[in-house]
Length: 150
Image (cartoon, rainbow, N blue to C red; front, side, top):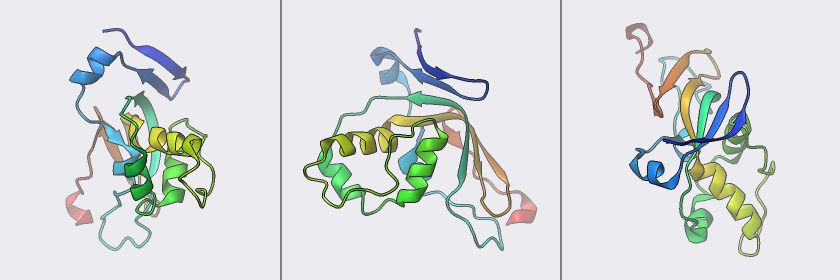
């Protein structure tokens, strides 16, 4: 299997898998999923957004669908998406989405990349209130609580 490294540092690795390998890869934790997750520890008030501590990020190409993106933008917590994308090494999203999306394909492509193509392969999701880390292994977040957290 050949993998192209996009960006590497002591704590982060960005990989682009060849098309044949991407076809065999199962779904990974994308930012669209991250935008729906929260900390469910009993008594926690500040549950969202979970902070991302990436160790390995994979970029998987997904077909561009502007209609889907225009529909999704109203459902996404924008600040959580921007913070998540930046923590995964993608600083291209603006602090606020543009007011008119129809004429801004450049923005939609950046939104598409961050929402659907960035995949957290290894790392942690951290509760903003308690600091509890939920591990992400092989793209699967482990959100199970300990007995004393239920």
